[in-house]
Image (cartoon, rainbow, N blue to C red; front, side, top):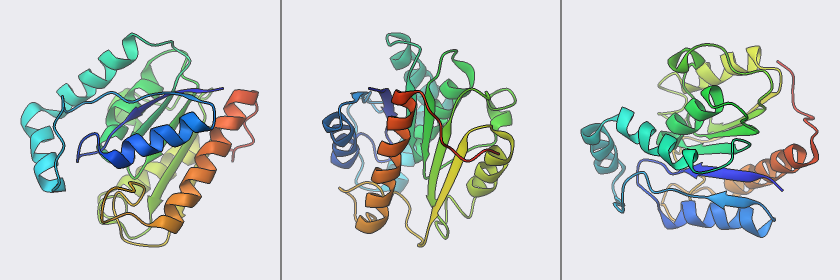
Length: 201
C-alpha cells in the first residue's frame, strides 16, 4: 500500500485532518501527520494564518521538510491549503516522490524551482468559487500544472467553501468531501498497483 505524508491547513492539526488520515489508514495505507504548528490549533482561520505569517511560511515549509527527512523517499505528499506548500515543494524537489495530493490550493511550479517532475502523478481538488482557490490564482496554477504534467488530474467542485474537506469545520461539504475521498483512494490504489490511469497533460 502507499505511504502518505499529510500536511494540515491554516487552522492547525484539526480533528478533521486526523479523521482524513485515519480514513486512509483504514484503507490500508501508512499515513504520517506531522504538526506544523507545534500543538496550536486555531478556531479562526485568520488567526491561524496570522500565526503562519508570524513564524514565516519558510519555517512552515522547513518543518514539513524536516518531517519528511525521517521517512522513506517513496512518499505520496498530501497537503490541505497551507499544507500544500510543503507537500508541493517536496513532491517537486525530493527525489523518489510517489505522488502528490494538493487539496484546496496549488502554487505555480516555478515557486519551487521549475517544471513538475514528469514521473510524479498529481491530483488537485478545489471548489470553483472558493475565494482562496478560485480567487487568488490557485486554480490557474493548477490548470497550468495539468497542462504540462504527464499524469495529472484537476477536480473542481461546485461551491464557494474553503476547507470543505475538513469534517470538523463549519465549511465542510459532505457530498463534495465524499467525492474527494473516493478519488483520493482511487489515486492511491493506482499508485500502489504501479498504474497511473490519470489524465495526460
